[in-house]
Each structure stands twice: as C-alpha cells, then as structure tokens.
Image (tube, rainbow, N blue to C red):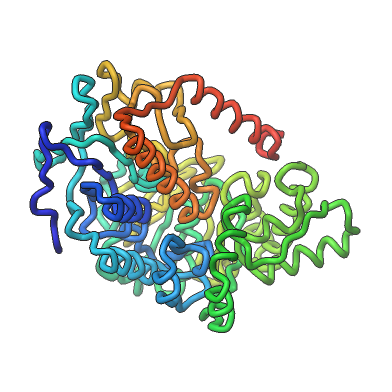
Length: 496
C-alpha cells in the first residue's frame, strides 16, 4: 500500500486541503484538488479506498441504485471505459471500481491509510486548520473537507450483556474481510434494515437455522437483478451526457431510464392503479415510489401504494401470521425503501423464524445467545444488523473546534444546522460533503457527492481568484436553509 511520504505541511507552509475520508466523496475531492494544482492529503481510517464499500462486505451487499447511474460522471473517458457486469452492482464490483478510480487518477500517493483523525482546531490567528491523527501526525491546511460519509459509524445498541456472547459475533457494517462460514450453524440476526434484508436470503440458504429479530418491518421492492443488458449499457454510453443531465434534474438524482408519470393515484380507477403498481413492481427497484406523482405528498395516496406492497407480502409469505409481522404500518417512502432479492420468500423456508421484539425488546445478550419475552434463544453466531449513527456520528467522534474553541458537538447540541449541508457557522473554511440538511441518503449518493464537491471546488476557485482567505456560513444563511428544508418537508407524508 502506498502512503504519502511527505505532506510538506507546517504552520509556515500549510497544505491547501486536508480531506477526511477516501470513499467516493474523498476520492473525488482529492481528484479535483490535485487537478486544480492544490496541495492536498486525504486521511482514511480504512486500509484502502472505498469508504462504505470497503467496510460493508456482508453477504449480499450491493447498491440499490442501478450501476449506470451509481458511478462518477466527471470524466467521460472513465465512464466510457468502465463496464459494469450487473444491473445492480455488488460490493466487490463497486470496490473494484473505487480502486480503479484511485489508480487511474494516481490518488493513492496522496492518501494516509489506516489513520484516524482525532482532533481538528481552527487557529484564528493564522486562519489555518490544525488536524491531528491517532499516530500523532499534525497537518496544517487552509481548508478542510469532511468526506466522512453519512453511514460510516456503526450503531451497536447497548444491550445488557452485549459482550458476554461466546460464539461468533459480527456487525454488518464492519464485516470481516475473510469469508464467514455459516454451514451447519444456528444464526441469530438482529435488525431488518437494508443490510439484513440483503443478507438474510444468503445466510438462510447456507446455515442450519436462522432466527430474525425484528423491531420495525421495512418496505422492500424486488430488484430483479441480473447481468446488465449490454445493448442498454451502450445506448446510455452513447448519450451519457444527456442521461446524466436528466438524472441531475430528478428529485432523487436517479431514474432517468424509467418511465415517468405526473398523474395522481386518483386519476385512475382501482384496476388501472394496480396495473401501474404491478408494472413498477415487475420493473423492480426504487422506482416503485414514483409510480404516481402524489404518493409522497398525499397520505391517502401513500397508503394505497403501501397497501399494494403489503398485499404482495401477504402473497409471497405462506404463513399468514409471519406475513402480517412483515407488513409495515408506517407510510411508504418516509424511510428509504429497501431493494431485495427473494427476501420475503425466504420466510417460507423451514429453517427460518421471525421474532418480533417491538413489544418485547431484547432483554439481554447471554453467553449462548439472547433472551426476549422471557425466552432464551441459543446460537453459534450472532449478527448485529443494527445500522449506523447516521449523518453526524463520525463527525462528532472527532474533536472539531471552531472559532473561540467552540466544539462541533456543542454547536450541534440542539441538533445539527448547516448551510446547504455544506458549511457551518463558527467553522470557517470547513466543508461537509452530503452533510446534515442535504439530500444525502435520500438520493443517489454519487450525484449528491459530485454536486457538493463541485460546489466546493468552485467556491475555492472563487476565493483564490478574488484573493479571499476565509469563507464561513452566516447564522442567517443557516436559519434560512433550515427553514426551507422544513418547509419542503412539511408537504411530505411523514409530516401529515
């Protein structure tokens, strides 16, 4: 692994940029910095590039946005030369893509791997940021870009006896790099979010018995994944600029390949509605949510879409009681809808059980398994699919001090506020890529990342061209942005 040998950073000779993270956001930020003749270093806690796709190696891990859209658009040669093999790319292929990008643009020599940023301090006297790592290295820079990812800090609930389990224990967000063998084992998995929905069918097919502990059921749409249609891929490549342009204008930054309708659920009679929903279901993927224009803004319309999915679950799952436990009762689309391969069908296997812990939470982890509702469950392996400390988790793990020594944790004690999800009052020259208040995980992350990195790059060019040294979000700008975001959110079904 190549490491940066001499960052040439001191208070007298600072870098232009310190970038925290070498996932897709950090790689693009580094590429833009170097191509603009800026001095930069990226600091990455992992042993290689890839971010989310470096850490999340659980069985079945793959993207829920189609491959031709979940990829960089900033370099035409890159997007023309790279060929995806599946409609929805799996983790190994996405990681190979990230490595290809790092090699193609010669980014590795500028990345510190296996290094944690522990503290960042804004020095008001010089207008510089001082960044300290866990190895004691100090970097001085004029600007900092926090490319730390929205889902990079795992969430591990503080179950009583959590560390008592004597069998194999894993979290889907920090899965081992070597294969995990499920053969002949009794496996318990806690959680039914995206990582669990993707991994359960594969684990169930390999283990002796699988028990799934579910608190809140999720809506999931089949992916209908398979080898990518090469004629389809070549057609997109022939008009990639137009295709990307259409995606950038779409609400979530993807879906330009799908048919789009502007009509209401109520414009069609029930058989026609079902036909529309069925067409989207058979097409698969996140596009189901855009079957009609008003399922995200009208509660009655939303529940018509939700009931269609619930009826699908009832059809796919043989046992009526299990089917009802798998049926969500919340609005569809409030949380990002999941995309699966044979998830619901897996509950028809004789070696799979579903246990609801909504009314009877897990009481404790034991040396041999766990206890819930007074029942002891014994396992050889326990998997925590309990998600992430999303959006702010990684940022708040770093001791970030802005003006007057105010920490980011103190500044956000009542909740995070940003301008555009990019800048924070009191923290000059520090930018967050897809930070709180941005589309982030509700959108195609690659599109959101490119938009933010390009905004930052343009901002830095403006500062350089106009001999400006400092830029900082005003309180009024933050408040106006939060007000706008809340105004938009008020029209969505999650607030009705």
